[in-house]
Image 1 (spheres, rainbow, N blue to C red):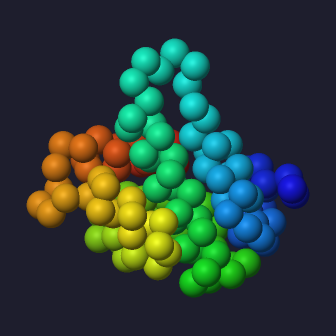
Image 2 (tube, rainbow, N blue to C red; image 1 turned 30 degrees about the vertical axis):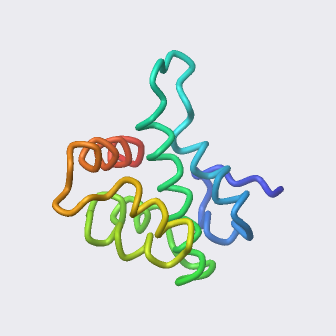
Length: 116
């Protein structure tokens, strides 16, 4: 697997598969060892991974961390990108109620925090 640290220039050029996307998500949002209830952290991590996968499908090799941060901070954009993959649609069904629930807002808050 290539080195996919998000501090490098154009991270999109280094991501070639879902495992690379997951590695970037993990480096942006590492799991906390002291987390007693990993529900929200796991949900946010899975969503971040799927958004990265979708970015690679829609804009291969040209998206940036700024694009990623913009998407996860906007619920409407987040929905659009999650709809692009089967896994993303599953996450939408699981975590994103309409209108947004407390669960949805908590997950989005975690995503925003990790990319600020």
